[in-house]
Image (cartoon, rainbow, N blue to C red):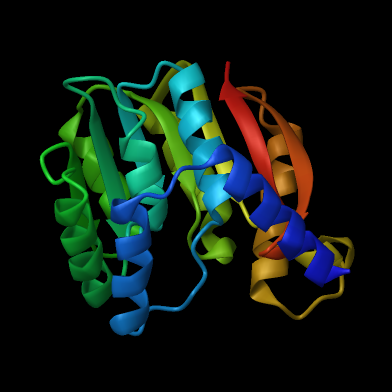
Length: 220
């Protein structure tokens, strides 16, 4: 069945997405530089871009840059004068992302911060800048609760938060799982269920990336 999921993704991409040198070049550079092929799909990237545009986002925060593929999609949702800050733990990945963003003509509106994300998030809070309008979380899953708590500190009411990879092939049903990513994801859902400042839903997805899903939330 997964072959059909990928074929449908190919069909959707062929009809809805135009060829894009900035995006395809980023994927080629990522592969050449040895980055893992775990970027969002092209249709998921376009979905993120549309979500950010629907939110009217002028300031976007991304937790988990990898090589900047999703960053490019999100940065292209920004209006003139908008800003995106993206956080990446691996210095090599951050350097590759900077090269990809420069090649896509987005270096001026995107800041890539290398380091441990929870520390970078604390630094952003200490800096006291304008709140973010849109947050995309796609990093280590055991830290999802910490990322969501930080996002609440860094956003305004009405801001949109998207968290990726929250179904994990159905593994979230396994309370006895030994996978830290499953535990982190389940803890995130417990937090969302109890947190009055967030209104959230989650959607299962299938496609070229397999069976997974995402959380879509709004800050109250």
